[in-house]
Length: 262
Image 1 (cartoon, rainbow, N blue to C red):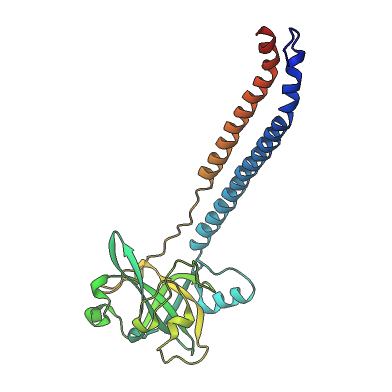
Image 2 (cartoon, helix red, strand yellow):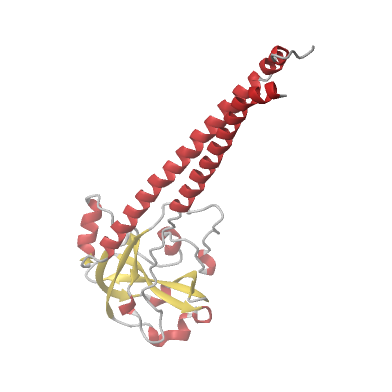
């Protein structure tokens, strides 16, 4: 087919390309909508995470509660994670449980010790803090393990109901090596009364540290909050796609004029 001066010969070619143009627009604007939605979702998540961090910061600066007040609040549906608590009892150092950890670049263990609560048959695992890797054996630091009644102030920590991640190793009670907090696993091998262990933990504060013993105050409130970075990424991709679509529209609008000029 010949091309006439008024461009009539070019019309069939434009009609053949119309479906492709429509597909580009549909795909492009759908992708643009998805990118904007993802960016908006990350902004929403950022607000939620900021609110959660503010709540935790407010919670950890409250006056310590007694263990009975903490249990009453939990029974009433109140969150107890990161709530300050004070308690008294006697440690069973022979029942220590060890979690792999690091502190200031040094490998070691967090020592969880069963505490028999004063005036009660209940027990509670207390994270006394960090010891270097070579000091796992309780006999190497007997001077740092207080005997008799102790007073502990720390933060209540809830326990996950299942393993937090599929890539996390299973706890190994037989070797006394743990990777995630689970009361049922930690009870294995201990002569505790049935259902006597409370289903949460206490991270002892730094004031509970003893010379030659675990260094307390190891709780880290470190909730990843990279949502602003993610939001910027999604919105930047949306902006780039919008520019590409705008240039494509400009090309379509200027193409007939260029054809006539040819």
